[in-house]
Length: 482
Ligand code: FRU
Image (cartoon, rainbow, N blue to C red; front, top):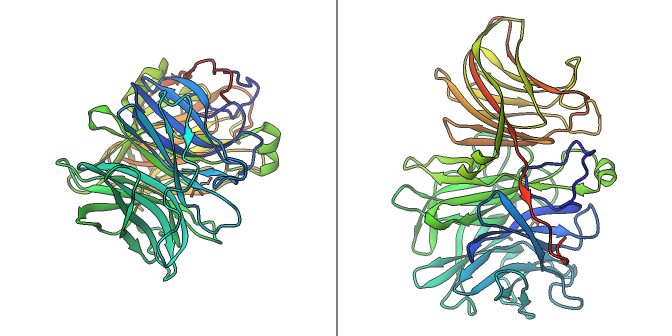
């Protein structure tokens, strides 16, 4: 697949097509020996419009083949104004995609399906709607998520209820064709998420469900949507299914960063759960338009729930194979105001760090030679937080700034894994399994460098390793793929 080598922001190890707009990951399923990853795609431009499902598949999460567009709006049909989000299931030879059929004159996006009998190369749309009407009392309704349940199937659909609650609505079916509404699986008035000023939203988009297992409780993950304000986030409820309802504790953040939304789950062979999210742009639209592309998928992440209810994520183990040259391998200490140079890294790297800070201390990624452009990742032992600060990460005022935090237990070494790919950073706190995704747009020329730094009254012991991040192998697309 051709990429523009002069575009310094285009990722090499994160999935996206060469051009145009993408948003949510869709139709994630393992079928016919392949991981199938579809995504909301506008083949005609860099804005959210004309939603199709673009499609990649891979046998190993490393080498990807663009397949023909899976779903396209049918002129005059129920999905004439967009094939919105949903998932897919593998049922013998059939790959069945469930999605939200958009028509602008309808306030809701009812569920419909399309089926592939050739491993995802072509899909035949059902034509008519599968679930034409939402249950009474909804004001928003879309984004089916179907999974195997005993001998039958279950489905969640994201909703906002007229009484102010956001909800995931539960259906069941013996055969994927006839669906019966059972009631809200979970529904909540707006609640703060994980001690932040973010909340669970008026409506829940893209509900995803990881059932409880012998290892631990289950997780209901959804994207908190609000009609007007922008306070969107990804929340997770940790709990278990009792009959037709999910009983769970207070919501927690599934990603602590500003730039991950609408994540979706894939049940991999062997029982592992993988998650991909949509990482949107954090820069002005005029800039996006000039570069001709918008959005990427996050890395595939392994996601699990510990017996104590902790939600954990880490990059899929396969991605260790993307580690190339070992560019930094160093350990030492920094005291007070003089930073220590750790070495050069490329624009795509995978880093592990063990930090033992007293006070405020951490790593700085310098992206220009004179040190005025940088991304800071530091531990604040006073507040017990890992802070990622992008206020100085671009000299271009069209890039968004901001400081983002995730809880980081004090009094013990901090184990980090940071994957940076041109304009995205995914920061994993290995010890707690928490993650923070953000976009940044460095403009500086020359090599990127790492520094260890501590506040004047603090000290930092560090061990840091970094590897160049190799590109994914993207096969030549077939003639009709994007
Ligand atoms: C989430 C979302 C979904 C919808 C899709 C449309 O980002 O708004 O609720 O189905 O995107 O592209």
